[in-house]
Length: 141
Picture 1 (cartoon, rainbow, N blue to C red):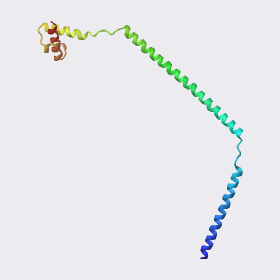
Picture 2 (tube, rainbow, N blue to C red; picture 1 turned 180 degrees about the vertical axis):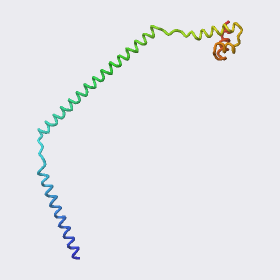
Picture 3 (tube, rainbow, N blue to C red; picture 1 turned 60 degrees about the horizontal axis):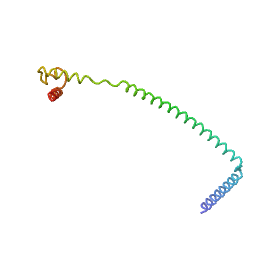
């Protein structure tokens, strides 16, 4: 039983010592708290705001320069497209004469008595295409 009493006494002493140390630390911390000067805080905030405004202005100027660069790039592209379209309008595409030549040659061969299969082999076109050309010619004549 004496062991329990001694142990209890020691725990109470340790607890009391811890409370004294905590009290001293908290009272010294209260004394070491810096006092804030409202005018100094205002000056620091003003300086910070001015710095932010300067950074924002620099960012704004960079964005404007970038937008102007993009605008000139787009203007160049639009001008190139306008020039290309005006060149195409000035030089209209030539009609495809291959189809007309094939039609004329197929009709000429048909008039000479060739069958659509022979016309297809001769002109290197499909049989169905040769038959269609012959039928078109016969319909119009």
